[in-house]
Image (cartoon, rainbow, N blue to C red; front, side, top):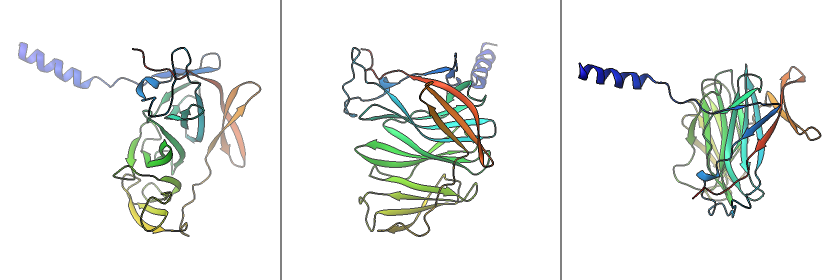
Length: 259
């Protein structure tokens, strides 16, 4: 009987759902976004933040998308001199609550997003240390609720994704500017036939290839209301824009980990 109970306990533990990500509540029109500088090597980032003199932190929003009932915000958290972490926020209730759809990536930024339909989407980014390097793609097949990271380079080197586009859920292209760090030319043209989960190098050139992809316009945008201190999220409706959410976003300053 003890053996049976032990196996039953193990089975129940296996069925326990994973811990849900922290939900940031829109309380009185304000969302407090925690800073996670304890995860970072501040010296590598060139920062001297302290408990008594923390480094002010800012949010840079580079891309906003709306997929059905979901709103996604991509960008980074940064100080005046250094990029701290990427950020990818998701709301499924019109901006009342938010959660992080993907773990923050150290010293990284997300630059652009695109969805081919309500399920399949991509976000591109890179590491920001001196020169941009180690470009990557985040891939989702569930409308942005979860993402998978795909690195473009096997080894660390300079490069940034200049543009990308997907024709459908499977076929896409992207253009990397390697800043002169590659052989044969500055611009690298890649193609994917697997929805962005794998990429093949098609061309290297000294000039931007004529076949360069161009990302379509986003279906959503963010506007800063400086007078009221609000971020206003709007979605495209034909030739007009409709506001779906407005809130204040409060950031915690960057402090070193407690000893």
